[in-house]
Image (tube, rainbow, N blue to C red; front, side):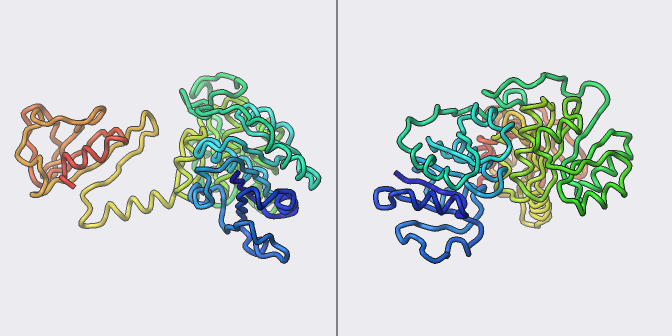
Length: 383
């Protein structure tokens, strides 16, 4: 069996000691490289430094063909995100995660993730589970029909934006502070949740709204914040895993219609969307897109990701090399769910008709079905 152990602290080292590293291929992942180099490390164990919430790190560890993964870090939200990526992205049949808050267990067990309390003695229990029948597969559990996670205990059903707008904001740092100010200036009710005492003390004196000291992914804290009546839940902490789990709890336990998460690592955006977050915002990806759009040789630019039905709005700039120059729109055969919305020509917008002919220099605003984007790019630009 190939077994991946995430977290090489007190519990992780005990688990590895109880594993037969001659009979099994064992890979250990930890962000702290010093832990991976501790004296007495087993030479039969492959060690990998990195953050396991990144699918590329799990891929490097051999997650595609892994039989089991144990998420054993000291951070509960990291464990839950890693476990979900392991199941949903890589289909690892046996996934177990250490948690601290018993209130979280039912939802994640329903999603096929075994959870247990953190004890060093629990290492023997974890290893013993390898011989048990795999827990039920839950492919598709985190699919998002109408923006809600499927296969989980039903959450209260509320209208998308029913009643006065109420926003819960997790994270009172710079991003949260300025976002709260902007919302309050627009007469929107806001509550901020901040886990760090120093930031809590600062922001509670700077903004005219309730500020709660606590974990934004805690059921008790969200109850205190009135999550059952919130229309929008926004998580903007510095940690992707905290933002993901907070959004999941808000939607699963309280039925918040719209969840928005800040994403620091753009590689985590598709994963977080797959795991149920309605809208993800990556400043890195946004800035990169702006820079790319300003490059003089750029012929393609993403204008808007609709996050619905795999659709996006793209700009394509035609030049003399474009195979469609001189052809009429009715002569073109576009891929499914793709169409030219507007043509910008000589500073004016042209509504495309069947007899509209494409010209060099045209800027095409196009509705694109993401899986078919390579086809439409080749059709319009020949690249």
